[in-house]
Image (cartoon, rainbow, N blue to C red; front, side):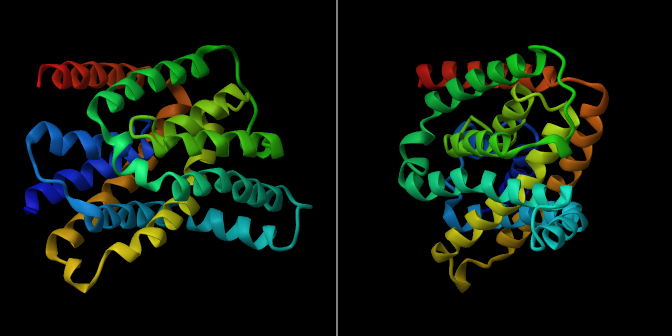
Amino acid sequence: MSITEAVVLGIVQGLGEFLPISSSAHLVLTPWFFGWPDPGLSFDVALHLGTLVAVVAYFWRDWLTLATHGLRGTRSREGRLFWYLVVATVPGGLAGMALEKYAETTFRAPGLVGLMLIFMGLILYWADHRGPRARGIWQVGWGDAFLIGFAQALAIVPGVSRSGATIAAGRFLGLDREAATRFSFLLSLPIILGAGLFSLRHIGAQDLTFPFWVGVVTSGITGFAAIAFLLRFVVTRNFNVFVWYRGILGLLTIVTALSR
């Protein structure tokens, strides 16, 4: 893998993991459009390691507070939120282990990826515009946690978007944009950590090349910037720009797939 490819894929992962545009879709489509070789599972681990560093760097204080209160029980709002995040992690973790083979083969068909980009973009638009949503993050409950976790499990299909699915679910459940986005980002830490640990079996010392570390650094820096950007963006704006982007990319992907 060239350094250019590592940088581009690192940027794609960092942006796509946290913006509601699907990092997995972009990691499928970028090499496909440019005719690059498949980066392989070892580089996929590098990219997830970078985004893990990004979310830990941004939210480590939040998670430290939540975990400290959570281990004492559910009396405090921080303790309850910790366990809500634990519950929400379970469906995605089970889906990842059960459907790993399909996620690496069948689900990566460009035509399917294009359809999912469009479909989930429409779902995000509907969830974001179906009425006032004013619940804050401290008003999340057990049912909310399970449903948002189930939405996260759907992101095993490239094009769905983990952040897009969980933010849309949060909006459907009545969370305001900032609360839905923050819950989604907090929820990303355990699922990215779990996916990274689960994938470590695929790499060895020979895979720790310079492009590997370029991917880690690039995705980490870009991911941190994407988190900071979106949390500020949703305070005053809706998700329409991401819906339009998903629709255009999805249509371009489908047309290209049909013409090849």
